[in-house]
Image (cartoon, rainbow over all chains, first blue to last red; front, side, top):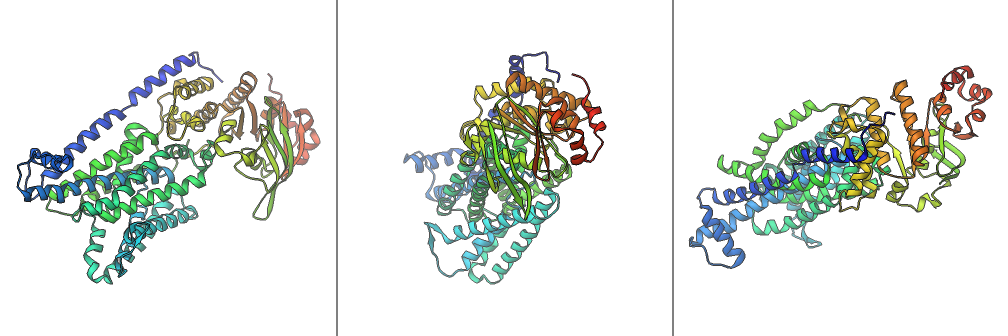
Length: 359
Length: 250
């Protein structure tokens, strides 16, 4: 073998040079934070009543710090604090959650087209939540509502079925996963339609799951979803080593010291938990989990230690601006906006997807 | 270093390995040979701890394999993975850096020592000219070297290879073999490789282990293992064909 004339020191220096040229992560962090702040100010300010940024900031500070900076009337204050701030925070939380769940599914299934929506996981969660609404009593399971628990069960069952069936389908992994996700997703959508048919009073709520929107955001609903999504995302972030090892396949990951069976169960469970919590507050919002991790990976490389946190940040940004667009366009469901962005993206990826990503 | 004692592996009612025993000392270079279906790759997976034998035991550095966690195994033993599909675009150095995963703490990324090991592995395997390239765009020979560099970056005392030359043309086969010999002789890495090519095995490996129908039938230097009668019996070919390939100099 031709051993190069350079020394290990040279190679180290060149490696650092190549890495620096590629290291856009701090730009992406800074940009993501600026976009998030901008999104928050616009998201709170824009609506049927325009509230200037100075008023929104002072109203928020009054509530958070107990100051008396704001001179706005109580109605304006209520619009900002009770309606728009929880809506913006919900959009950000759900966006971050869906993007991180997408990154986890893509890494785990080694498939750039996987996301909670495409795989039917979100539909499973929505069906679970809808079934919980049909149960005529409200119970708490381990402190969380029945809706959360059923959504989690729905998400877990659907991803498990899709994962197992795709593995034994005999098709190429990419095709097998997409077709299985489509079939299971269709079945779940039929279940959701049946749930609506029998729903009676809960029709509007179930219908909102199907549409995907932040119309009914509130502090209470945010308080139910935020801890689950936050904890789920952080725990997925701590398993970056696993996601990196899986880049080379399950057996290679095992050779690199990863207990693949255990880690797969944990990651599928966490991604299902985050998806379920997101669907419970906002319904089916597609393609966030597909677009965001993919773009981040394109810019920073596939290291999950970088991809997961940046996906969370930019997922929050994407959804807060999608919601803003949905409101400007006449209060259409935000799921329509993300579909308009995401579906062409998905088709472009599908067109580029090669059967043999050989190494 | 590696002890396999009475390993038996069964799958779907069929015995794939039957009572296989051997041990490999630190610094040895051993090739596992045998016809298709003899159980070579299965044996390699047993040694790697991926497959647990139904009977028998495996020891790694004096410790039973069954009592080691995956990460502990990965710090003692590296496996050059088979050519595999990459789901996302990855630079050559990013693939090689995956070899450091067994040394990383779960919450902490690569440290300077890890980066130095990656640079050293790239240097050792001679991949400097490929830095910054998308690993999916490389030739088969180059990809094989990237995977070898990944295993070298793992800095494990034992290196396992499953048919490392299968995709390579003759020149690249010989180059890969020379690199493996160099890793063994200069760095003291213990090598166990599954090889199809008897000529290359006999030429580059001082010790061969021959498997047939899941049994170990011979273990020793190439001249003893590859006797004319055995080549005829086990492989069903004329010995002259193998000899021709094995007497290639150096």
